Amino acid sequence: MSGGSIPRLVIAAPSSGAGKTTVATGLMAAFAEAGLVVSPHKVGPDYIDPGYHSLATGRPGRNLDAYLCGPDRIAPLFLHGAAGADLALVEGVMGLFDGASGMGELSSTAHVAKLLRAPVVLVVDASSQSRSVAALVHGFASWDPEVRLAGVILNKVGSDRHEELLREAMDSSGVPVLGALRRDGRAGTPSRHLGLVPVAERRSDALESVAELAARVREGCDLEALLALARTVPELPDAPWDPAAEPGPVRGGGVGPRRLAPQADPRRPIGQTLAPAEGAAAPEKPLIAVAGGAAFTFSYAEHAELLAAAGAEVAPFDPLRDEDLPPGTQGLVIGGGFPEVYAPDLSANAPLRAAVAALAMSGAPVSAECAGLLYLSRSLDGKPMCGVLPAEARMTERLTLGYREAVALRDNALAAAGTRVRGHEFHRTVLEPGAGADPAWGLTHPERRVEGFVAGGVHASYLHVHWAAEPSLAGRLVASAARSTPARGAAR
Image (tube, rainbow, N blue to C red; front, side, top):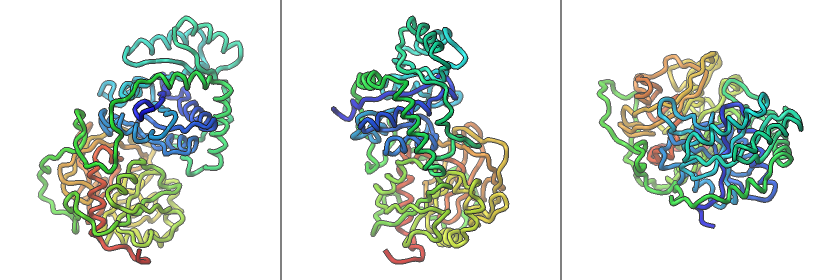
């Protein structure tokens, strides 16, 4: 079997809340327990669901976001992530046809299914309907002829009689029923202000939940029919994405590397802004520390791969537990997560806060996104943080959510001036002020404003960016790290 013909299914739904994550995670775990190598994927920018997928399969959960990465990079990223797998399962986002606001099908589950030439299995919440389920499925099956809706899994079925009525109605739809799951809250996953609680915060309970989901799916779904359906896919003509490949423009999509003249701005950079030439040779592997643990769970798997491919040694650490950065650290990446939940514990780790501040003051490159931005601030909900940025952060009731387009206003340790990216914001915190004298990005869509901070080697922003769309970000960070002095600690 060639890499392009990896068996695959897309698990979608008419709307959010139908049970996509329940069914997709259960299927991943059930097939993995049956001895298959299962590759897990998630449509959209979400970081949390892939954690459960990884727990179910033992492989990294990977995102497929056609807005962030461009349509032409979806199949290559899929083939990279699914290499060596017997089966790939792709969990959708929102409703099947819901995409980026105002941009048609872009980044919708249906769009990704078409890009992957994959059959769609629709998870339907049947709790408040019987015969109407056939009309609903007929509408979804006929809406876009290019989307192959090849099966239905009925979720939240109330009784044997309810299932019988649903199956009778579906007999006339032409779409086979491949499973029926009863209403059952035993395998529920707790939620809070940004969605499900990440696996890293409840690993033991999450393992039990995933095992229960696998048992429910084995009992209620026709796994043989689902696997047979997955094996009907055509071969994808694309080559797998390679993190070691030379950065280049994305074909046809226009969201890859692009350079524009910097916007006019008379202000001078704060401190020394590191801006080494892209591709500069490093004398040795610079060590880049990457924050993890329960407080910083938001990271795309491709980021660490890109850092390593660019020549870095990647060293994970946990700001909740480790009192110092890894010895010899020359660069730092702090991604997203839930620092607001752990603000007292992060604040209590004063030795690490001091180490992070010292590294930032030395001019070493520090890339911080969302949670990382808050961690670098003076305080979060009144608790002292690292004090690298002249800003205060606090929780609010207001959710900031959506895709963004942005441009780097000047050279910095992460991006060359004029670099255009697409990103995603997802938080309930505010930072005052929201931008420094030298902002990280100028947002151009859907609103125009400046955002984030650039100071010395620090690049800190609320914006989550998928580096696979712009691999030069990782290369530039590694080149900057190679030019910096290692943090205090034992020599490597």
